[in-house]
Structure formats: C-alpha cells, structure tokens
Image (cartoon, rainbow over all chains, first blue to last red; front, side, top):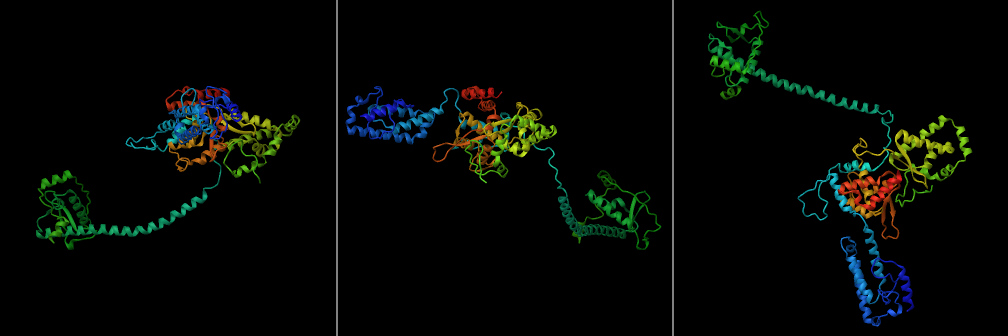
Length: 349
Length: 261
C-alpha cells in the first residue's frame, strides 16, 4: 500500500486545528487509508482486520457522509462563539477515524471552520461585538426607546432617533480626528449680481397697488352710506320723538336729562346724547336752561330756524360716566326712557 | 485618451474620473522631470528667478493646496508641479520646503505624504483637539460620525472586516444601504466612493470569492489623521469599560501613538 504511505508523509506536514493527526491530502471517499492516532506512522502494519470487510467500510462511509452533511448544514450554528458544537463534531470525527477511513473532505471542512473560529477568538482581552456597539451608539445619539413594544423580532428597530442624532455623534467623534479645517474665503467672491432682482421686485409691486386702489373707493362708499344712513335715521327718529312730546304739552319743558337718559342701558344713553347733538348742531332743537338752571330741550319751530342765525350759538362738551349716569337716574327718578329703543318702536308699529 | 495610473493600490470601483482629474493623465512625464535635479541646475534656477518671484510661487503652492484640500481628496505632487510650479521645476524642493514651513507656522497644519511611492499628500491639523473645547463653530458634519463608526468596527475587529459586517451594523443604526438616508443620501456611494477616494477607507476585493465579496480597511489618510487611541477611548466610554480591557487593540493604539510622535 505504497499510496497510503505517501499520503501519510504528505499529510503529516499539514497542520490542523483538530485533534486528529494531520493526515491525508485528497483522498477519494471510497479508499480506506491507514490512520495512526496513537500509532504514528503505523503504515501497512496498522491495517485492521475490519478494513477488509466491505460492509464495515460501507457503514463507516455512511457515518462520514452523515457527519459531513450535518457540519455543512449547521455551519452558521457552529460559528457562533457561544457554543462548542465544533468540538463535538471533532470528537466524533476522531472516534470514526480511529476505526477506519479518513475522509479528507470532512477534514478540510473541519479545518476551515476551525480557522474561522480561531480568528474570532482574541487570546487576551474583551471581545468586540458590533451589535452591542450599535446599541451603545444609539443610546449616545439620544434614542428614545418605546417601552410598550414587547414583540420586537429584530430587537432594536423600535424607538425614535432625534433628527440631530448623527450630528451629536459627529461632534464627539471629531475629537478622534486631526482634520485640517477646510479653507474658505470669509467674505465670498465679488460678483455683480444685485441689479436684476431689484427690477423684478419693483414691477411686481406696482401691479397689485393699482388694483388695490381701485377696490378701495367702492368699499368705502358702501361703508359710509350704511353709517350715514343709520345715524340719519336715528337722528330723525329722535326728532320725531321730541316733536311728539312737545306737541303733547307745548308749555311744559322737557328736561334734557330725562329725555336722553335710558335707565336700562348706559350705552343707549350715550347714543342718545350723540344723536341729539346732531339735532342741536343742525338747529333743529335747542337746549336752554330753565329757572332751576337745569337744561331743557325743545324742538325749534319751523319758522324759527335760522341757518347760521343771530341766535347765540354755544358749544359745550358733555361727558357722562356710568357713575354720573346712575346719579342722574336717582336724582331725577327716571323710570323709563323717553326715547324708545328701535326694537320697541318696530314692535309698536 | 486612455486613463493611466489609477489611484494607488485600491480595488476601487470608481470606473470614471471627474473632469478635473483628467489633467492628471500626463503626470508620468511631470513626475520624472521632478526627480533629482542636479545641484548645478538648482543653483542656476535660483539665479534665474528673483526671491520675490520664488516667494510668489510658494504662496501659490500654499493656496493651491488649501483649495484642493477643501474636498479632502489627496493631492498629487504631479498636479502641484504641473499647475503651479511649472517652469520653476528645478526649485521644487526649495519651494515645497518653504510651503511646508508656511503651513506649520502660519496655519498650524502639516503637509503629510501618505503615499511615498506615488507622492500623494494630505493636510492634517498640527494642533491636537482639546477635549472640552469646541473644535469648530459649525454643527457636526454627520459624515464624520458615519466614518467614525466604520473605522471603529474595522479597528476593533483587527484591521479588516468583511463588508457585510459593516452593512449589518449600520442597519442597526437605522442606516440602510438600500434606502435613501435623511442625512447621507446614497449611503453606499458615500462609503465606497467618497470615503475611499478621500483615502479614509480601503475597499478591497477578497480573492477567490464567488459571489464577489469585499472587505474594508483603514485608508492611508485615516492612518495619518485618525488617532486610534482616541477612538479606543471613546469606544471605552460608550461601553463603560476601560480602553485597556481590549488588550490587543490597546497595544496597537499605543504603538501607533509613539511612532507618530
């Protein structure tokens, strides 16, 4: 069996991470080769009787294939640093190899895995786990973890990262760099650009203003009309009241206070004073002081109206406050308004 | 026009160069004439040009390098020679020495050669950042944080990582290379194009892999610009561990520190 001897010598030069001796280059699965675990370099003398039995060899081959399959399927599992399945496989491998055939395909597979696992180990010091690193980074960046989520499959895709998360990290990470600050001109370059934008702005401004002016007059007219109407109407109405009261009893003077005051409403009182003042201004009514020096109001007779006439024209400013209004009501015992409010008028009508 | 001489030793995926870099094509010629002018040539050149003219050249070189550094893409010596030095070729050494001194004394920067074979330079800050003092008034550039994360992973994993490790870790940080990101846009492009071109990272093909796989390493700029010790210290802060607990990385960080002093 010179072949096997050659393979033995070649194999012993190889190193493997497994417990079995480094043996064999490429061998076809069917060939039974000599193995020396304890008996090194056993050579032909190490042939066991079982090797000659085809049935036994078949059994061994199938065990090998099972083992190869399980290693290939569970590769990911095996690479997990947390478990030692690889060691179990290797132990089993040793067990079979001692009995009979050595399958180099399995050996290559096992050594490959062994190499990767070895590179994962750091002989001294802590290990570094990128996932844990990511978690710490998220906390640093200010992740708001949502407490309610219990059923997270990926474990860390819940929670809300603030918008400045990466800036926060960058600001701290900058200290690890010795970056030269980028050079930029402080004041920028000189380019003559301003003029065009200004023209555009002016044109835009002109157009709206014209339209706006056109709009204004119509609006104003409407407003003034409505205001004027209301005031005129009210003034006329009050004149009507005054005249009717006067015609009832032309001899008894009408007290100004009693006329304008509305005991139920201070604001109505003010309005009445306001409207009555128009009557005075237009010369349709006059205020005079009676014997008691209290003001009285009376309509001016048709014939007496003298526009801008010789009759002495006086001016006075009347002011009234809620307090004085109440005093007047008390003093004159005003029970009801002589000028009815517009609503009551319509009701009467 | 054929593209000769790619950027040094990187399995870069950038197939096209930017327009501004097409002028690089003749660098071979420029490079050869720069090497070793004879002392008599140098002497003659010194006589031909007035000190004022040479001063001006130095200033032009300084300005050229400052502008080129804005994008953080390393500057080739050939470019400096071709665009600035031009007919002052023989005085190249003089001019560069003075430019060097200007950077150090006026700006507090250092002109560092990151590739001695291809003569490529970067500017780094001579001043160490002081913890507690703000580095700049500008808000942090998010790309710095992204770069830091990738450099950290590579360093802590022994200097080389398969690209998937980086992609998976970034995904946990809500940065998905398949999607457009709020701060980074096309993340993959930023990482394997921009960072690689700036020489912060190397993106190298792993031989004999099918389908094609790549791995990341620290780039030549990172080696000069980034302090491994400071990176380790920050990682320690994040994990609430002493940097010394990662003994191998600590050893590497301290050896780099001492060699750089």
